[in-house]
Image 1 (tube, one colour):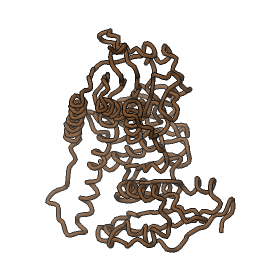
Image 2 (spheres, one colour):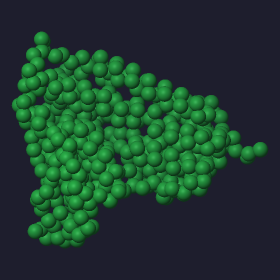
Image 3 (cartoon, one colour):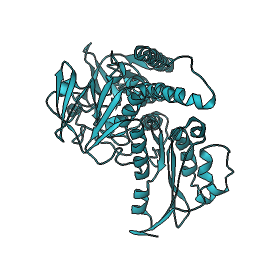
Image 4 (cartoon, helix red, strand yellow):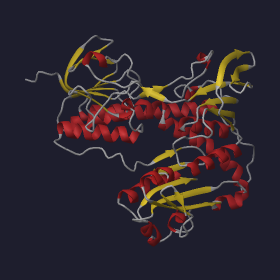
Length: 462
């Protein structure tokens, strides 16, 4: 008889934790998973999934406006119903949450819907019932939570990305604090749904860390969508008034809005989890320190996903959870490969990227060739829109290997996902050139970029 009640206890039923539990059970392990909120985690409940649904909703306005150029006459002016969108979103995420739970139960995983805290290297306490569960292995997959910063007077009147999906009233005026991908996505969504959006951030441009050309292109696109971008400006205070929320800004100006969304980052959700009782080491941000095997400083305790603050993307958490279960219970040895992870920013236009940026490539390669284009998409010709597609291919000038591809435009995320396969296989620029174009499409530009737009030698430009 085993000295432990379960082989694997998972704290947190988000994407990474659910995958680990299901794979472990599939290998014959006895698995238990605990979730204090709703099964599905941030991605399903208040992250990727509802956000993408709202992105779709926001783009219909553009479609209605462009339809006239293609011969359509709308019988009446379209009207947007915010409560109906919120209700439809809630129905979908509830459906997905139920599917997650059903799949766990079908796999033989015991599901406990209450908070779990660590009591020791092999002990977990369920806080509502007080039950102590012993486990051979413990996996922490609790994700991250929004950071409400800066700590200014009146910050209690602001909301985070957790609350914005379920506002009772649609904000006619919205202030967004932050310049990262969450901030710009919501700025784009609400501007296209009809809100007057002001986005403010500390830096001189949005999306720090992304390819510079794409940052500039998206900045210009947001400006065309009437998003007011306040560079180097942050709120100093928020005051609730009869007219709305008054923000006093660091440039001594003021604005009044209906809602203030703070999207200044996320931090690992480890507070009060009991990690210190077991001796699990965390960094200053509260992230669990793990090695290449996702093992913490305590051999029986592991962590995957955003709680480690390594690569905070849902597919990464899923991959980490899957391979961890394979190694613990299936005899596998494979490790997660963090190179060439495709990412997307679901603004309008969309940003899709995989591989190195120009700046990153120039730091690590002797010769870097750039192939870049900007063009008006075919759809805009008849619609009369001001849309632009920007594409940039970064190439190793010595080996001809494609190091990175960056796209701003419709379906950029879809293209980035497929391009990731090519880059993982070591595709060269010559392979792109030899590939037959699919015409007419925006993606064909990737295989017809013949003229090099720039060549960089270490700290020199040709």
